[in-house]
Image (cartoon, rainbow, N blue to C red; front, top):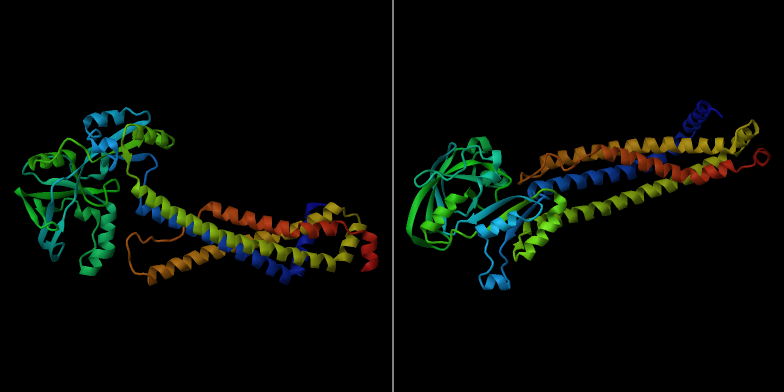
Length: 425
């Protein structure tokens, strides 16, 4: 039988059984809609996790072990010699040392702050980093200019998000952008602590100038040029030779494991706290997404069972019709193809409707979240990330479910004896 004739018969049968097939397509649409909805939600939440914990797959942070034989006897140091050895590890492309400010520091600001007067005092944590780490993120020169000159600082971009979503609304302060803040100066008093309530000999004041924002900057603390931190530590008699940590960047992500093993053999440790948090949260999101996707798959399987029941009933009702088709020359393959074609159309329609339902559901959830949820740090514009692959996957699963449900009814219809079909009906 020609394909055009088969399609004409399938279309006529679908029109005649529209009510029953609409129920079957609706079940498929519900399952596929849930599946695509949950997959897009999981992908969107994973994107939020990456925004909150931006971890590079090519980077490792080397630190001195807190407990170890070498550290107890003072044999493990992150100094220039150790930095040179770390740079020679095969696969390491760059190494960026970090040096902590080992003296207390506070900042006090009294005056106008973008049109609002504020009075604020904060403890300051300083981290010295190599200027090369930030690249173009530092919009102003990021280098030690010596005593008396403003100290350039780079802060983590997430701090600006926290300020705009939490700090500013609570205190009636203006919303700020990075371009507004670059170049802003505020005082710092080195050698004094509010928390410990102590003042070191030689305490002095300086100025900090915001040079830029970067995801490479530590979240807890202000990043300053490493030479500035070394100079301040030396001025207060603190260790200025040993580094607090070293950030290693691998040439390829596949080499990270070998580099980590080499670092451990050298007696150093790895600080993977932020990476572990990101992995744990990401794994939790994946687990929940998997559970919800399995639920959607169960709904789709039930829809396939419903399709099987609907086509079994249809085959029984069309026994005489199938007998006539066989009598006028239709082969068993023609009959099976006709049933499967009807099922394929049902599945494709159900899959397309399911994808549309998922997109509509995502839009409604985002709209409710945008209006109903208060502003909070890293609140995304959308909690969903619909990928073109989701559309293809949804339609493919719907088609497969419909064909699977119609397989045995099609086989049963093809096996009907035309003489008995005409006699019994």
